[in-house]
Amino acid sequence: LQNDHKALMKQVEEALHQLHAREKEKHAKDEAEALAEAMSQAQSLPQAFAKVNAVTPGSPASISGLQVDDEIVEFGSVNVNNFQNLQNIATVVQHSEGRPLSVTVIRSGKKVHVGLTPKRWAGKGLLG
Image (cartoon, rainbow, N blue to C red):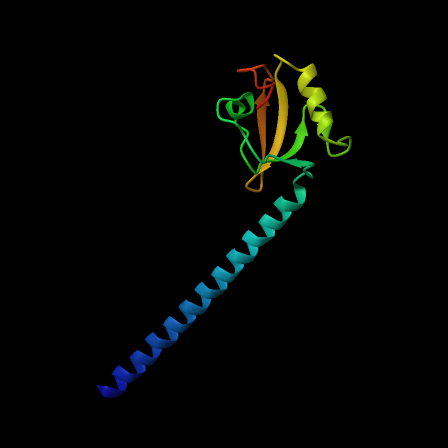
């Protein structure tokens, strides 16, 4: 009876080791796949040319959903290929007053599209 018990316990122990080894392999494979997906997603994101460092509450920028730390990829017709300085954005804003602009940003590693309509508000300019 003791020998049967020892043999049975050995089988149970071996089965547990195999189970844990398979689980460890699966976990490592899942982590590798997640890392590969994150890397491919990061590589497919367009390059930003500016970063939002402040958004005034109640401003057109705030109402549109722009957030601090958003990285601007496209602002109307301005993109990384034709951006020279912030005056480029100011020009687009001035020519688009009252009309919606398409703005694309990278937020938390994801590309996000925002609709922004420049307009004068409380004497503080067009965007805020």
